[in-house]
Image 1 (tube, rainbow, N blue to C red):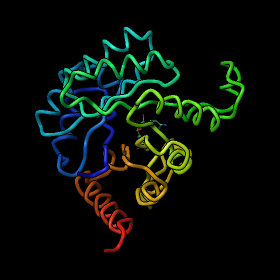
Image 2 (image 1 turned 135 degrees about the vertical axis):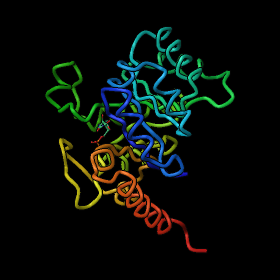
Image 3 (image 1 turned 90 degrees about the horizontal axis):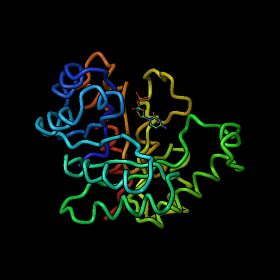
Image 4 (image 1 turned 180 degrees about the vertical axis):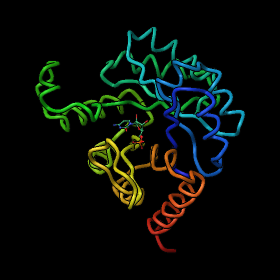
Length: 237
Ligand code: C5P
């Protein structure tokens, strides 16, 4: 199955479903984030699943352990394929989240968010973190691995370091731009093939596909690039 996850960053159900209808569930999974979910509720997830898509529920839970555990069960009951929580919620919160998924036959992949890429060193210091972002990313990733998380959200720049330092964690990587497409508001961007080479396991791609004139064609082009890149990574027989 493809590593591609298309971010459905829409404010209404119709736009999200219309975009999904133009995409092939054999070529991508879909990410539902806070805006779409808050507007449309669990039903949008069910509708997308009904169209044959596996869904990454990107709600980044961060609360007291019992509340996060309950929210994780709710996501698992919804049948999502991947979900995420903030590693900054701490050990007990992550352990309870992991435990909450223990009784499901096909639990969602449980991904930890380390440091949001929107935060700089000065932002961290203001919140009492006396370290550079990369140090805090590593600290939280190690804690996430210790709490049996399945993976982390990581920029392509962090992916290589994380693959070396915390190899058990999958790396879910946003900020992807195929060559020749608009950068948008992403600061540090890499191509799909470079992200895979740097250690990404899953690629989150939004506007390069959803804002393309022909989203299906954009998806097919990225899929072709990924297929080539992955073939190169396979050891020769
Ligand atoms: O349109 P674009 O490809 O920039 O969308 C990327 C998606 O990944 C968005 O849904 C965005 O919220 C998410 N994301 C990100 N950067 C992060 C974490 C998540 O762009 N560091």
